Amino acid sequence: MHIGVLGSLTVERAADRRLWMPSANQRRLLSVLALDAGHVVSADRLCEILELSSGALRTTVSRLRVSIGKEHLQTFAPGYVLSATTDIADFDRLVIEARAADPEETVGLADLALLLWRGEVLDEFRDEFWAVPEVARLDELRASLIELRAASLLSSGRPEQAISDLSAHIVRHPLRERPRVVVMQSLAATGRTTEALRVFQDFRRHLVDETGTEPSDTIRSVERSIASGSAGPLVPTTLPAQRTSFIGRTDLVAQVGTLLGEHRLVTLVGPGGVGKTRLAIETARQLTQVFPGGVFFADLTRVSAGVEVAAEVLRSMKAPVRVGQGDDEAIAGYLSHHSVLLVVDNCEHVVERVAEVIDDLLVATPNTCVLSTSRELLRLRGECLVRVPPLAVDGARSSGSRLFTERALSMDGTLVAGGSEPECIPEIVRRLDGIPLAIELAAAQTATLSVSE
Image (cartoon, rainbow, N blue to C red; front, side, top):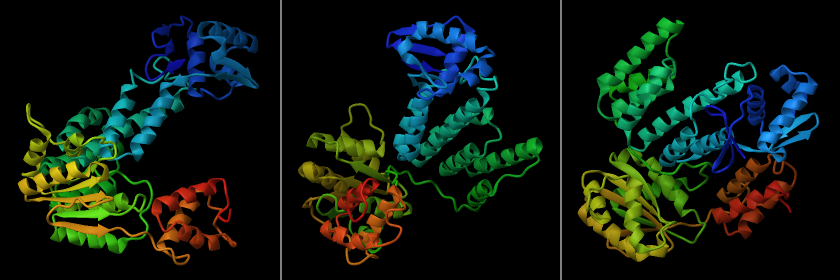
């Protein structure tokens, strides 16, 4: 059973069967239980909310069970538990995923989350005392998600869409600062500096008139950078967001960055799990301002055949495609007008087709550089090879030991906090040959095992 409260109350027992309950008390009871689906809600609290005696509550519960099925509403001391999925839980999950995703994925996840809203949350009961805290939480979460989505549009090279999508949002929330910041940055990114500064002036005037306060240092710093011309256009990028810190290999990142200044094609080569992808992402991230046309990331992991390579590269750039235009032609057409760094990851299983695509675009687009990762060379003229070594494993301060320690601490800070446990770590990473993926998988085991175990 699925309960919807992001709008008027809906109850679905199956994909094609929607229930309606004429009793306001049953709808109120179900709404209260839906807010804590899967958890016990005490009978005393339900009596308070519904303004019923214990006996009247039992009668209401009994009638609700007839409507939705007794298996979905069970008695557990000191109250009742609703067994159902809810749109609130779906929304919360999608928000968490959107916050952790890269900009392009964030936009898609945000769209899915916002589609769950059919109106005002807890529409019929939103002003009742028990509903007000959850209404406030969800309304704030929705507003923040709209702003995160717009910021992700800006980060992925779509400032005009970010401006358009935030127009109505700013009207509804005139005192919120973040949407103003995103609009200012988006206008600056499209060269409309005067309009960007006017957004700040209008916001400051409104804030002073309504609240008697001044804008924060954050939006003031954005205004100053735009006014001074130091903000510059935002570089579009589809580099994936990273959830963990980057440990070691600082010198190697700098080396690869230098090589990309001297060679248009650099390939990172090494065995699986040695950290080629992470090294490529970190290097590309530090070069975003070097390539004003964008830094794009094409992950070929999901590509199963060579014919799909060009389509995946094109998708990573979000380049426009004319009717009847082939993927290779569309890539060359876009890159011929932009200075771009293209990261092509996991090439080994389609290496021949990857080599063809990259060779063609390097010939056709003089301002494009490519950073590829593979277990084998592309074997193209001008290709610069960088063999990615394992992490250092000698001693407790080696990069391998630091990686294990940090990942283990994220599982349980007490496991490596003291005693003789840390002495085992250099031996662990040595036996794992300094392979980052193997070290991270081993560190994850500290959730259930001690380091020595």
